Length: 307
Image: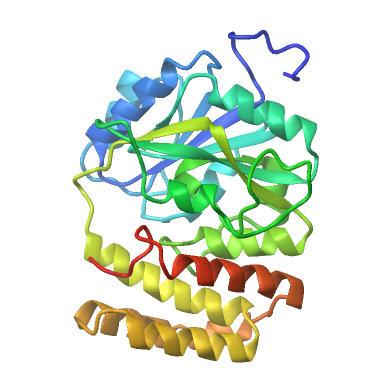
């Protein structure tokens, strides 16, 4: 369905919603209920990453219209790659099992992408529920230090949040999807950098909204380990030698000196053989963007390797 024949306020077939989940049955069912209520009536594809809590059975029972994929084990972010094989629409909206899109946002995102063929993705304003306050990362997105072409619908971004982004399906496939080596945790940065190297742009858009009711079923320490490990792997996969050395040294000096950080560095070191085999540093103009984001994030309250 094109922008011309998508009736205002009615169904809009330009976007498919992709959700990955693992052992969060109640949160997922709530999210699917919210997505079902959207006026756009998007197709929804769920990858159940090996849940053992009856998630898949509940989805089949309560949401038979959802395309449910069951790989049988936890693919992490690569579960989105699996889901993209089923996507036939020009755009894909990602959300987590504890986030859901506001009515009208998918239509607005599709309109923006329709009008800007080199725009790969738009990231929404995130509201934390039940308070309705902005997520701490929103000011960082709104105040992005990057500059971009005048046609961008908002600030240029150097990365995106998969729980709050609508992406051009063509761009996702051109970038090869999420890298299987990273599994989960900050996996967006590598993909975003590769998209920019191909000439795509990313943008934050203030009038897109997604709601986030953080699941209580999360292990903050495990997430920190994965996030720090993947930051190190991204650094050595894509950054030139001297910036990679400086970034590694900075992280070693500034992260908490505890068991979780030690485990993260240990896992990062264990993966160095494959990382160095796949190492492909970005050109100077992309490294300049990465550096600008790195400087801006040093004062961020939303991106700390703690927990």
